[in-house]
Amino acid sequence: MAAHYAISASEDDGVIRQRLLTRTTTTRGEPPLKKLLKKFLAFAGEVDKDSDNYADCEKLYKSFLQELGTFELPLIKTKAVVDANKREQESFKRLQAELSKQINQAQDDIEDLKLQLEEGKIERQHKEECEAIRRLIGAQPPRSETQKALNELEKELVILEAENTAAARTLEIRKKQFALLLHVVDDLQSTIEDEQKNPLDLDLVPSTSGVPSSVDAGTTAEPMAVDPV
Image (tube, rainbow, N blue to C red):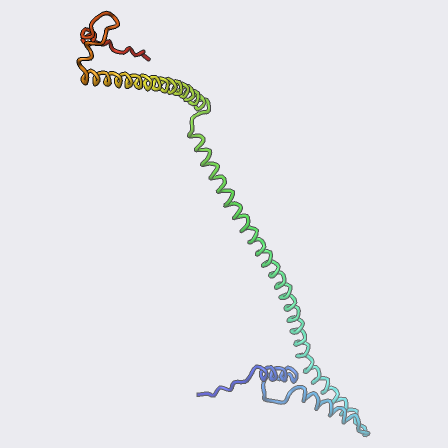
């Protein structure tokens, strides 16, 4: 089984940075920067010689320029990629800012809609209550009929009050008549008791009408007249 060699994030970043600086993608071969440095040193060393070596200098110069072009081309590509990444990053930042703005606006809209929803619920509740009251009012009879019924009730109330007054007056008269009747009965009972206690005294009592008392006692008493109500 193949072995796995784990490296840390900082080491990984160092390796990537080194490869970008040396323009190498693998650890094999000589780095391009080192090759370019050798070409430059060879050209500079040949130029410093005093001998007549224009052909060798020109050859080394062309070789250095070729190596420089080879080294510069990836740099140009890398710069283009970096610039593109920067533009894309700026575009992402603008997009992020726009999205954040839209999110904030959406949140504000949601809060406004919540308030509108609550107001709509309250308004709907008020409408339902008003509709219930309207139905209740519609179920009641017209005002003219209600007023007519009130007038009839007032008339009946007046009649009942008159009847109540008359009944109270009649009751008062009956109370007086009953009290008088009780007084008469009480006097009659006292008279009867006296007659039973002293029966002989009745013959000695003179009659005011010239008739003997025995005749008066046997006479039937007239009932007390009571005024009709």
